[in-house]
Image (cartoon, rainbow, N blue to C red):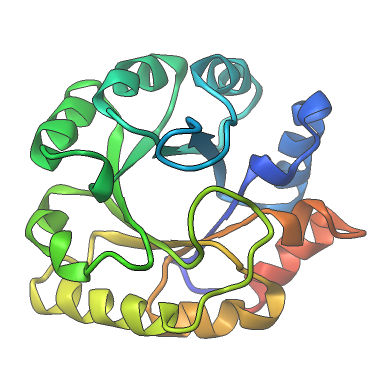
Length: 221
């Protein structure tokens, strides 16, 4: 297994009436991260969960909690999510005019920092700040809804970012990919340069979620 590969099941696709069961699935399957999609019905056309849910998850798992904020004014939610127990907080480059300020705020709250980018946004918009983050999250669908298909061209964007990170000696920065990740396309996404894959419906809507998680890891053996 690649030592750098991590799977981040997205609880957006889990049964919200029983998130404890979702955590147990992730634990038994061996997933490294828990991915939490935060949507505000402004930056994206959907509304999901906030800091109280992360706070309720934190004492129930030792997994790395990965919060993906698809929200306007991300700086307003940084401290609440950090206090709730988020290990990593990712904001969208499109959601702020002061990305360095948001990065500094997340760091000051004790969490790792991620920056995400939509499919249509030029990668050059995030290049200047990649040396300041821990994770770069490439959206391979339009953010806002689960269950979408993987967009053509996403692998090329992943490869371009991988090339940039290698050239700048920024191998410590993880490339995370979110959207349309399935067992049948995961290997090519990893081969393009991804370290972390977010998968929601592929796991939690499957007949055997635990085995599905294990199957993802077997792809990198």
